[in-house]
Length: 409
Image (tube, rainbow, N blue to C red; front, top):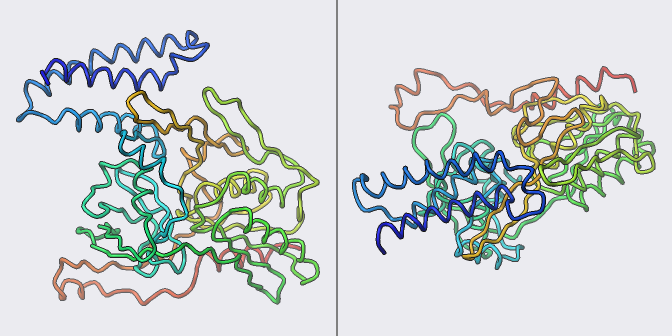
């Protein structure tokens, strides 16, 4: 293909993405003419960049790869959940029916790479000591910088018993670890229930906020008076999966009125989710919620609602920052865009995806207190900094229990 044709192909692709993004083919598009004009002015910049790539790059570039990279970068510059899918990727994405075996990792994208949001307890990833905050540099031979989030999530799935090779970069380590995991059928344990302080404190920990687990919490809350429980400790640490509607229902259990959350987008009608007194379960018992950097999405919605309504104190670490609604736009060449069209906001107006939720009582996780061993250093160098004894006390949990103990029931 002649160079000029290649340039035109890329320019048309970029224009197409910008056109879809700005919605120029939808009614009322003229109201946004000023930002559209600004976007179209950038086409001249794109053309100039392409000219230099074509004429001055060290070798003849792969124009298809350049195009895909540019479009992927354009979408990912918006947020981690927005993705560009090539025609091949989109075909695989549509063919996926879910229900495949997994390794127990919830992922997003940070710093250009796949990032571990949370790990399912007891999963293959958990047994391999993968932790939230770890970076997945590669899945098999594929560098995660070059893969959209939608396809990363697809690659993590597979047939039961199949192997998955990951290159994982851990905090305070210079070289990635090569880890081979075996995919297993996902299992969702029931809500963990524990009694503290002579059964006066009911501790609840769901692994996911779906309909079944939220229903379990509702039944346990309704049975509190019979069990003699007077206070509630809700542990949302490393809870990153679930459904926003179920999260709204869970928050409503503790609220008789007030705003739970809002959903706001440029072309999505604003929705305000308000507590319904008829759906509340316990609006008076003292509540403390545990959160950490693995708390994401639906769990963040619950934490923010209870915090902003002054219904609960939050203990732990700042949450991950997730909470957007996506829409898929199919493109004429068979490719597709997955675009965030609305974001969830806390009652105070903070976007969960942009700001996360910061607890009033910040307590670092025990993982942060450990001293990492530098595998590239000599044994003598590692011994020069004695390792701290293993931490067995859950300091976040201890702080939460202490707060609840001092609250009047």
